[in-house]
Length: 79
Image 1 (tube, rainbow, N blue to C red):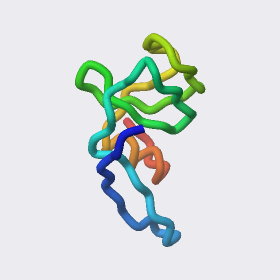
Image 2: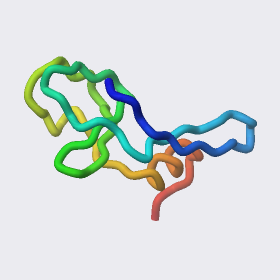
Image 3: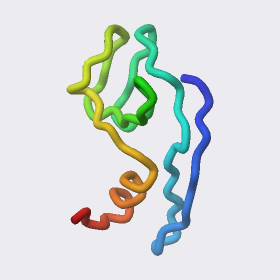
């Protein structure tokens, strides 16, 4: 995987949450593990099901953004 640029904050329990601001473009020659990030057609995605090298399978990824990832890590309900 290519380098990623991360944004981080310190959570109330003193853990640091890191969320990518950018991620490498999806590559059919790469395998992705759960919680890996990539971009596809200009959007950021988080891998939710292990994805072997091969064609894009939307069911293995969920679209996300920095705000949604911090909300998820902080367990903040979305309206």
